[in-house]
Figure (spheres, rainbow, N blue to C red):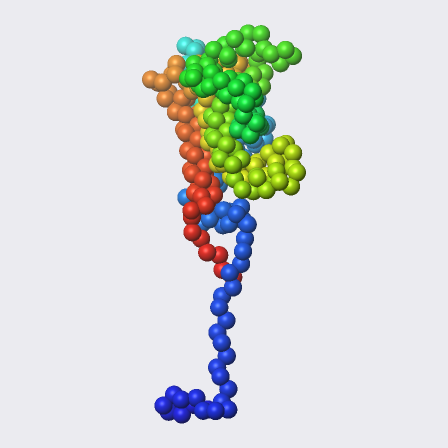
Length: 339
């Protein structure tokens, strides 16, 4: 018992100890995901990017069920009802109709009478596919080049590093235009010059050093760590050490570069297509649509501004999400997770 003075008498039961909250250990990637979810700005832009991707990949449904015209269907002599009046899709002077904000020709038509809204979505799908394939090439071959040059060094480094430095020394747009112009004429083996694989391959090759060089530096640092020495002492071979010890520890660096390379790839594809060295007619991309709209920039600026806005929003969303991923994977971030 306890008297009024607060003294505990003999035989009295002691108060039960208060349980401390239990801290649960989580893996680095689970912890990074929790950090990313707390970054509301990155999550909002991530949703925006997913919405833009969904819109572009639903282009066939919009084309078939809403606009009822294909992306490459010419309709120079066609007419459309706008506000109860019949209007030519392309006037007798060759001027295409502007935005109607209706089911058909929502953003207007081009000089051939093709629906720009349909071509905008198909063009976005083209840009995203090329950017995605190029990013895949960059991640695979850039990581491989960085691992080989950083781990083996010697003759491997003497061959691959100067090659990466050579590609690095050229401005990406100039090198991309040069390769795109050359390959658009004859293609690569069985791949025709009009294939979407051509700009994807060009962009992938041009940006390999932008990932390979940072990965090489990271591998040079990791190969001197104690866990690698322990793996060698256990009798592991070089390939096993490189793939099971070094690559997992460099994974966070690779993950951070994925959105960056995707944004760069989409931008470079637009540059090349704008200059005529990327996507070839009749295929559309955001770059070709911006280029085609320049002829009407003084009369109907939306022809260039709308695909330009789609491009800016997509790249902005990717960059914001990429910044959020980088911050989430930062080992210096202090986050305590409790149950």
